[in-house]
Image: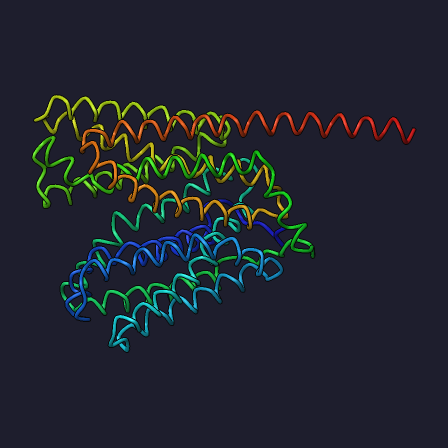
Length: 410
C-alpha cells in the first residue's frame, strides 16, 4: 500500500511519464542513428541492428526476474537506483571505442530499463485515486507514445548534428533529469508484505492472467507485423516517399497519444473488457480497409491517412485495459510482477511480429500483412474473452468453497 496518495495529474504523474518517455526513446532512437553507428564502429548495419534486438530480448527476459528480486525494495529507491544505472550506461557511450563495448553498455541500459519501466506502471497504479487508474496509466503510456513522436526525431537530429554518441549522451542527461524529478515528486510506496518466491509467483499462474498476457502478445504481434513493413506497403499503395512517411509517422504518433488517453477514460467508465473489445474492433476494421486499399492500388492518400490515424489510436488504446485487468486479476501484492510479465509480453510480441511479418512478406507478399494482422487482433480478442470467462468461473468456485467452509465451521 502507498504511504500516501496525491491528487491525480500531479507532479508525480508527470515524473513517471517523463521516465517512460526517456526509456522508450533510448530503446527506439538507435534506428535513427543506425547507419552512423555502423560507420563509426566499422561494422555492418545488420550487426548494428542487433543493438535493438538485444535490448528488447533482455527487457523481455529480465523484467519478470527483476520484479521478483526487487519485490521488497521501496519503489522510489528502485526507480532512482535503476535510472542511475541507466544514465551511467548512456553517459559512458563516448568511451566506447568498439562495437563490443557499445553492446555491453546497451546490455547494462536494458537491465536498468527492465527493472524500471514495469515499476513505473506499478507505482502509477498504486498512487492513482479511485476511479482514475485507467486514465493515469494512459497518461504514462503517453510518455511511451511521445518517444515515437518527439524523442526519436530529436535524438536522430542530435546524432546528425553532433555525432551518434551525442544522442546517447543526451539520453543520459534526460535520464538524470527524470531521476531528479522522481526523487522530488514521487512519494514512496511501501513494498508488498514479505513473502516467498513461490507465494509471489502463484497468482501469476492463474489461467486468466496468462490469457490476458497472450492477448497482449497477439495484439502487439499483429501491430508490429504491419508496422515493421509500413514503408514499402505505403509506397506500393499510395506512392508515399520516405520524407512523406516521416510526416505521417508524426501524425500517427499524435493520434496514438489521443487514443491511449481516451482509452484510459473508457477503462474507468466502461471497464477493461469493453475497452479492449472496442480497440480491437477499430484495429480490425482498419486492417480490412488497408487490405481493400491494397487490392485497389494505387489508392488516394485521402483514403489511406484516416486509416493510419485510426490504426495508431486503436493500437495505443490496448495497453491501459490490459494493464488494468492484469492488476485486478493478480492482486495488489503481485501487481509489480504481473506488470513485468505484461512488459515482457509486449517485447515478445514485437520480436515475433517483425520476424513473422518478414516471413509472410516473402511467402505471400505485402498484401497479406493487413489480413494477418487482423487475424492476430481477433485471436487477441478471443483470448481476452477467455480470460474474462475463466476469471468469472474461478471467482464462482472460490465463493462456493468459501460458503462450504463456513457451513462446515458452523
